[in-house]
Length: 513
Image (cartoon, rainbow, N blue to C red; front, side, top):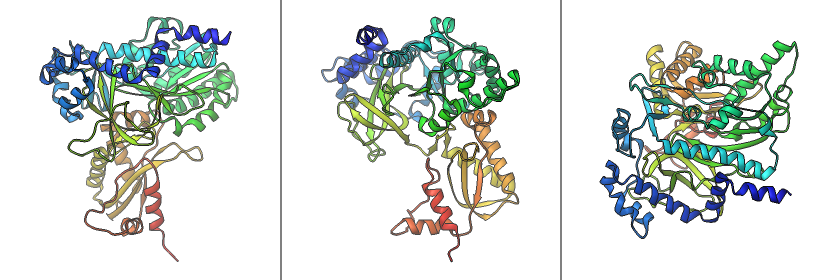
């Protein structure tokens, strides 16, 4: 009977699509690329690179890579701004009304146009993730209760009337299938889009505390804060003293995570939930939804090869070369770190996502996300970029009269109930009168320029910077210990997503007996 049910589920559209690209990965991607090129042939970009001719080439991938260069956001920003102003047929057919904020703020940040085709693809991706789980487990109890999603906010852009801008998750929530909003949606969008995250999470907790919630879709960072609110609301209403989510939602079955690495939160989530719940990781971004965990016993994620995205990969050790080799899924190798580039149904063409991925297998194609190609920390969804950190440091120094010799920023793990955050190890030439005031200035500045950071601070999901001032010479001592020789080219990295550098500098700063 189980095999009959699995066979029946396999014929559902989203599941059939998954099975097809797993059997025919290379041809699926090749066909998808031809389709994208053909559909965009009459756009400005299509005429610029002669997409029509490329689409008809016998080797469409080789022709595409020969004629269309790799692009960064700086390369496309001018055209994106024109699209945002209402220009049609620039990068993709037609006009755009939805824009995802990839980083920064709605008014001043990286903006990715989102087409209706991409919205449709991503909805199918989400449904496919759920149906794949059902096929593997044959446990459909999550259909018998409510589903709670926690999307980011979207809003009409005051500078561009008639357009919507914000988190990609919010755009998808606005375009959710009718069956979901009618049958499963636990809270209406007007609650999910409350501007203040603290108020939003409280409102969601109050509305769902008495509901039969069976499936969650959200970033782990927000889940931690929501769970605390939920437990508080339950105890207040029932004069109780429960300590776990499982006592409030006893039928909770599935948690679908995205936005930040699940590995950073898995243990804490399991402790706070307190009952057996299946955790499924997905990997998506403004540029597309890329992969999902298709096997509960394997933490790596299946790369979705038929979701409106054609993938290219450049070895990380070749990135920055004038003409690096552009790999596709036909020739990637397990264990190698690649910078990922995408061509999408929203008009991104060989576009650098900024993530580093590593394949764990190539049939099927499974990946893990190894980090960012740029100077950035995103361990808890804060998306702190190096230029933002440098600007914040300059601001704090200007306000306090401090002068900095060297610094390094790394994540500060959650220990003893503390919130996650960043540790800034700084060697001052002239220290500020108060490290606490210095931290407040950094924090205030970053909240003003970084939307992701600000939301996590506002929701009390992330702590202010912890400043560790080290004595003169500490960074140099660390450089000497970690390099065979020191020259003018020997530099201290400014940030990292692990604590190797921070712990090394702190150790080097300790006096020796």
